[in-house]
Image (cartoon, rainbow, N blue to C red; front, side):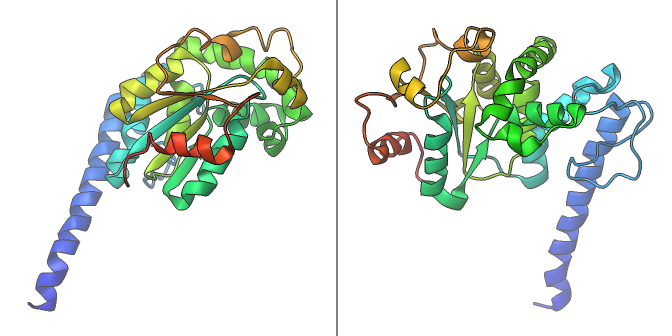
Length: 266
């Protein structure tokens, strides 16, 4: 086989890939944006940005729908891959969600990616108010001071589009076989993931008695612990797995093993 015949398929593949990408972007520009602007950061090179785009959470009405559709399918279109399983974790404050999901990440290593729906919320809030994003993402008093205001703002955004933060968080995630979503809080979060990813989704609820949560630093806060962000899934009963992470809990290894049973052979 000649060198030329080896090169030709690769060159054709590159041309097809470029044509496919350009077609997607042209469709987006034509259908969603009369000025033909691109969306920087969506995996393609754009030379200018449409003045109608006003940022992530306040796009022009003429661009919003097409941008949403583009975001939902970006991962598959640009890479041809998708996660093989998506683990959605829910639980009240100080029940141990971050601790358990971080240990799960350590167990599965580079095959998994942790996604936090709260990250785009906190990122926007930090930019708008000149705050320390790393502190907002941490589990400390700095975040708690701003929590109520962030909840109110994010609820307003969800009323307009219940999947806005889920969509953004997934759009920013690396494509790996296992996605761990560590902070599911509302039925609409689960709804969006199931509508978008179907049977790939597995739901896990962490519980812990109040005494244990208090030992971990929990203090009841009006407007935080009695609203949808903490109580929205209290009556949801369709969990694939419920784990007690309070008194009488199983060992960490036993907990991780139960979660691993939900993950297909990779």
